[in-house]
Image (cartoon, rainbow, N blue to C red):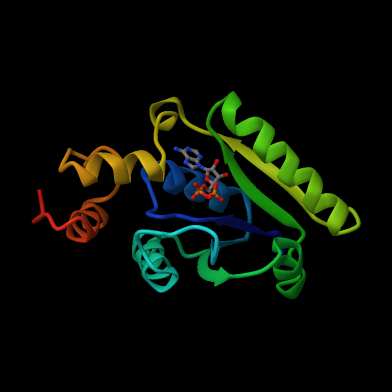
Length: 163
Ligand code: ADP
């Protein structure tokens, strides 16, 4: 069975992430979308909230599973017996960081963990969770960035009623 892990912060999940998830799900038997519990970042949504949002957003894709993990990605992948990581590439600015991560994970796993990249669709190239949060913090329109139920939850976090 071809399985892959798509790890990330997903704070919150955007249409860009969802596009990668849909395309990855078409290419693999199972995609495990996994929320990184990163203690060094202060997220808008807790890990549990992000997992629940991702579950709701991917509920119509049967071969997608949502989990969370903390610690090293290589250890988590080993615990799930998965040897492939999926990541998205938006622009050249993502490239250096992603390349470094992919090479570090390959090294740490003694070359048993590979990373595969999906190029973002042009229409989502501008999209990031950070810009969604920044726009929403000023009450701006994020309807083109995230599903409606997600935008409602984001506005709630910033003390706005649903737009
Ligand atoms: P991280 O904090 O691990 O970078 P993110 O949630 O920001 O987590 O992103 C997870 C993955 O999704 C990364 O590989 C990132 O490049 C990719 N990604 C984020 N936004 C988009 C987008 N708009 N289109 C395609 N890929 C994206």
